Image (tube, rainbow, N blue to C red; front, side):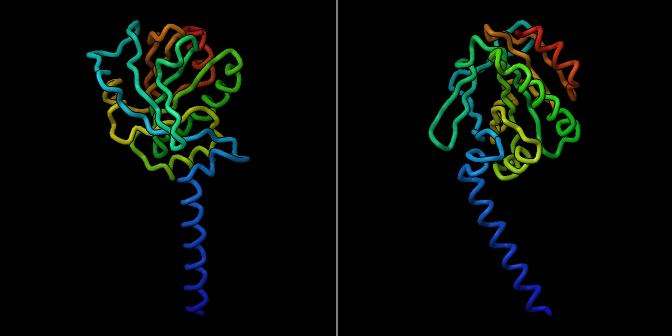
Length: 189
């Protein structure tokens, strides 16, 4: 009986190891789950801004994907953008993700972009969360915490609504509802 339990545990361990390697190599972003690729958010040299506030330009940062692609926030000028700082362990973040996904689906045809900046978690934890919630928008992991510091994030979830000219129009701390997302989208669209 003990040998059978050990064998089952070994087999399960191998399955989890293979699944983890598959997720790290981008398996979750390439197939049927619909999840977007996970990138690493990195600070761009010289991107220091004393204060992020409503009416100020959104500080620039770059997302580096494992396939070599790079996207800067400034590349998204001309599109309304929601930058959302979050974590998988945060109950209010978990509560708002379905609302953000629905808003993204509703407004993406008009150019709406969501950049979900995860605060310092592992790629595997983020990939699992993305699959669980069906997230199809841009996700970046702020491994060093530099982007959160740049945006002066002191609590999560924290959302920055950036208009088509790259100006922060609204800063919202706390879990967003569908009605609040619709109202705030109208400000940046």
